Image (tube, rainbow, N blue to C red; front, side):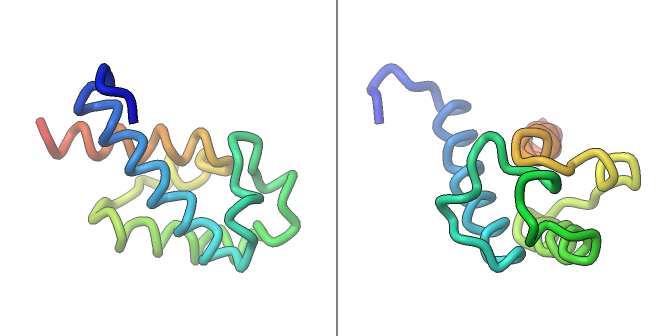
Length: 93
């Protein structure tokens, strides 16, 4: 890790790594498949039922509660990261 990295960047990177592992586990996918392009359209394991399981797992792991809009829009890894980061930023206030 670069010495010039800020605490927010470090936290964001750590959250993304936790999320990547969680997504892989919830979907039964190889963690190497969970890239910036991972989505419901690129991963056959990311079915509608798996998405609900994933959302529940993410809520439990990060201690957040998603709105229905967030759940329906977080259908790829980058958007899921954004939603988590927003919740974590709000909790740090």
